[in-house]
Amino acid sequence: MAGKSGKVGCQMDVEKRVTTAFEEFSERSTQPRQDIARSLIRLGKSGAVFSAEDLIKRLHRSNPHIGRATVYRSMEKLVHMKVLDRIDFVDGTHFFRLCGSDSHHHHLACTKCHRVVELDFCLEDEQIAAIERQQGFSIQDHAITFFGLCRDCRGG
Amino acid sequence: MAGKSGKVGCQMDVEKRVTTAFEEFSERSTQPRQDIARSLIRLGKSGAVFSAEDLIKRLHRSNPHIGRATVYRSMEKLVHMKVLDRIDFVDGTHFFRLCGSDSHHHHLACTKCHRVVELDFCLEDEQIAAIERQQGFSIQDHAITFFGLCRDCRGG
DNA sequence: ATAATTGCAAACTGTTTGCAGCACG
DNA sequence: CGTGCTGCAAACAGTTTGCAATTAT
Image (cartoon, rainbow over all chains, first blue to last red; front, side, top):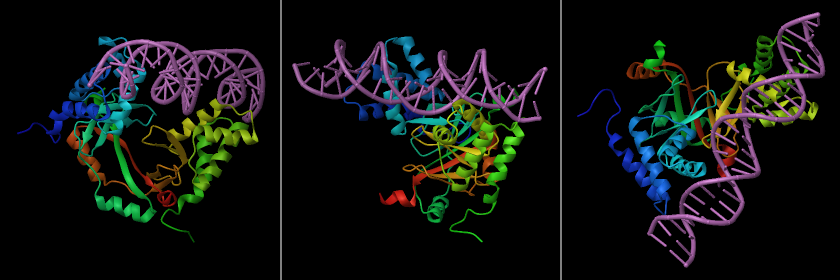
């Protein structure tokens, strides 16, 4: 069975997805990578949204010697592997969020608290094909982000 | 009459829109602002996509003393006024483009040459309303960007 | 005059790079 | 023990800021 609204199911796999991703791009299982994976998994389970700096700070709490570059290097790989999502806000800032599912999805973001929700919502293939035809592009990817205020921020 | 594909119509107004925008946020019509407006109008008419640095370089050709900050200050205003569009690419870079129309629109971007095309395409109000209802957000804005290769870059 | 606006240079944020040394396998 | 990975520090890109000088009104 399930819970509230739509988003259920693949949630259990955050841990596996992160672990697998690290295995895929790493030849060695090093301490820093284990730390990063552990932190990300925790963040992923909570659905939290964070900046690179946020993650680095968090990692420094348990291991103050982990280098900025190391973290950036891992994040870059994970973003490419679509395990980590990067959400660009209109003001030019951006944050990251562990994908809650491995299927294609889009985002709904609160411009006040930066909370981000994953949406199953997508366009019809035919809509995309029509644009391709019309414009002579071959479309490989697309991003849809909705911006607004979440339940909690609407009031304040 | 018109040209090639879809996008025609409001094109004529690029100049007026830029001029009006500057009048709206400026109390004084200064030389630098006139220069910036002129450059932007030219870029707008050509549909070109450019970085802040691109624009600054271009301005330096006619007036080498115009300051980076001045240009950034104007661009910021224009982006807020939705006269200038900011397009975020997946690799974290971003470029600007004068809006070809003052109506709501989205983008199709070539990931190789950074060409950007405006699309009339949008979602149905009902689709957005459904997401609002489902998620308890109040949605104020949304951005849809398609990424791919344009006619010219597909071949290379 | 006088307040808005500018140009400059310095500060800053976020990210990347080069490289010597460490540690995983 | 070899080399993939790390940490450091410095470099970097893009943008913002503080402020004294300038300039439109």
